[in-house]
Image (tube, rainbow, N blue to C red; front, side):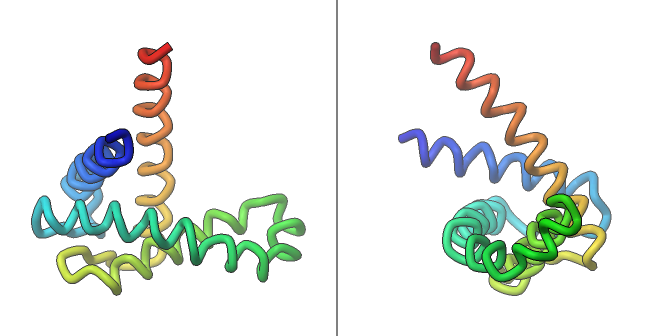
Length: 115
């Protein structure tokens, strides 16, 4: 049940970000839910592979290259979901940063309420 709630919250954040970021377009609620699911799958299966192969550059940049990997994951999600479009790398980067920040805040609120 917690996983379903997490996908719903992520979908709402994605819809909200699509209204504020001009380079991000989401056509429907179902597209946002699909983006949330695809992002979770890409972060689970593809991101660790990318992090492994780019470890040297990540170390040299003191971890800042992980932002680039997150943007690539968002762009890839935009290619996989028909109702989700990302205009460019910088919008994907900004989207990933704001999405991570918003999810962190929401998760900290729900985790602190459960204890």
